[in-house]
Image (tube, rainbow, N blue to C red; front, side, top):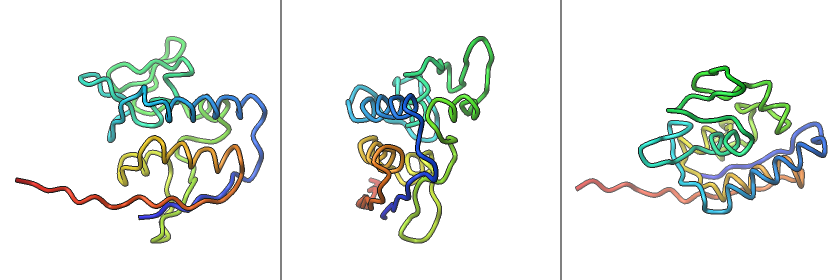
Length: 145
């Protein structure tokens, strides 16, 4: 499976570039264990890519729910805050699959199991360098015994 990126229409503001670079750095750092299907999994302290983005900007993840400034936003990050901080909405289409299907970051993380490093490459190409890239994720067969 391949993901083909397309740059955002509008360039980000400088503080949004800084925030995206911080997020990219954290995704590549190896400090966060990757989860799928949830923003945060408390039993093994793992995060999806959006969980990392919100955690590093002070949106506290508590039992798979986002809380910010005393408000509980439920299972998704507050869209307006996320868009202000990072320059795009959490469910905005950032890539297309080689099958022609649109993909947002949660889909690449949860359904296609792209690694944090691959997701960081996508964010970097879409938001920072504003170039198109193709990332090939080898399909891994799961074996049951």
